[in-house]
Image (spheres, rainbow, N blue to C red):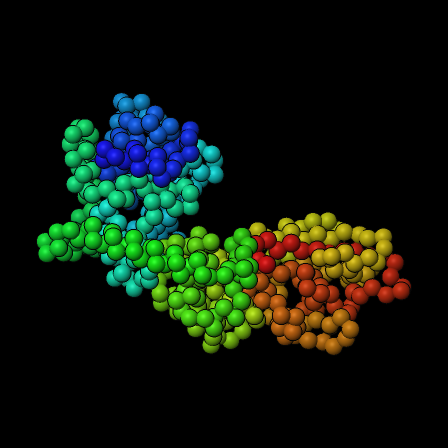
Length: 448
């Protein structure tokens, strides 16, 4: 690890004066990384803070945190401890325990970033970890990107300075510097796929091919370089991005899978989906685009839904439905419609229709009319005449099925008078005899 300081500075992993959080479990790798960065913090011009996350899945969690805290106190290193309930998260989201631990841990890191406590998070993944990751991705059917393995820097926040460093070199550093560490007993649990590869498969492969780790890592670098060449040819200009929502024109799906899969992978990454998406999921999206009916959808891992909506494939984070029995009285003012949007109703002196607003005759709103979500049996008298079932009406208006249950409707019984942000019924239209006007606007957050 003698040349590691020069390598980190050459690659400009950290800005000068940065606060670097080091993810420390107490194992040999993370303890070596913590020691190394602390010893060289002046050469790297960084400040160090140790971050320990207790996952609540093992009896030794707390003891390991105490071990790391004691080491930091003895060596003058700032220390932060966090506790998450990964087991509860796994049950709530229907995911594996290992996946839940990772999500919870990275949630802590992201929180530290948002709060300005750290500028970077350093992780202790090394060459052997990289080789295992590449092999595991290949076995899962990954393309070039997955076969490329982990990056030294991801999202300009997560840094893995040891990624090219052999495990033997790290253990030599630990021995020479008398660095204490703990063994994680869960590493022996071969029911976990990563441990099966680490404990059973890789040792057998190394017995036949002693340079296996280096060979796999070099293969990964080649894959990463080739993947970048292909990605640089992709034009993303027509894709619509918004917070929590991405819309891909159907016209993109005429291109080769090599092109489309990379495009979809980029879209999912922008939603923060970086794990558990395999080639089969990308194939499912392509099949939906080419063969699916309008309004149909598929579910992906990581709480993601994909919809076919007219000229687009829409990729969005899943949102819980609003309660059907929730109602709000019609009034002038602002109504918070659940956690999804803000409904604004205000009087207007003149019949001037403003952009984004609907204009109604205020005096025609019947007593007892309420704002709610749509219900079975709802109908509307279209502006200009003609009664339609609300579902058929929304189809005519090309309102995506994805958002229909989140649009407030003003209704008296099953008669719908207003569909917020869409249109008003014939019943509330403004005429020459209108005396009072109202403007209605609905901001549906993170959907369009």
